[in-house]
Length: 148
Image 1: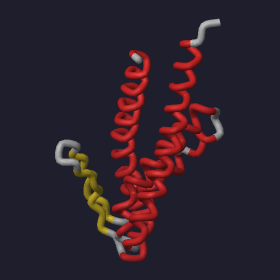
Image 2: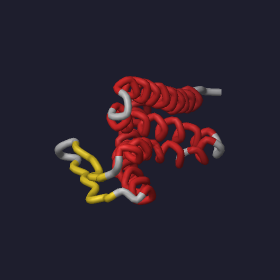
Image 3: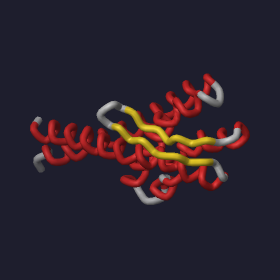
Image 4: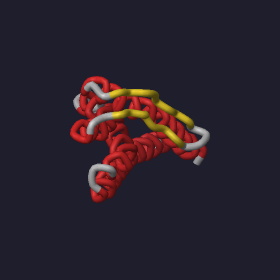
């Protein structure tokens, strides 16, 4: 039981750290894509106490679509984890899921239905990643409690 609590705490802490690392990377991705497209970038605001994060970018209507999609860049960066074994696949699922969830509001500016697509896609990836992490902890718990 004690090990199970430690496992749950580890999962919660690792998810929290991952999420808070992805928020600045998400906003920085908007910033980099905007710079690449020649848009005027003013600032990146990260205010975790007010639950607010955004990049101030001035861009033409044709280019702004790509800037909104830039928030998914962390998901693209996570692809090498997919090829790096079991732990890497879990990281890939979680990073991709959090990236889609973080991008859901951005994508809703392109089309309101994209919000739901991005949100549910992200939740699917997060759920798959959490399932894999939880089954790993459960398997370890069972193996450690066996007496041969």
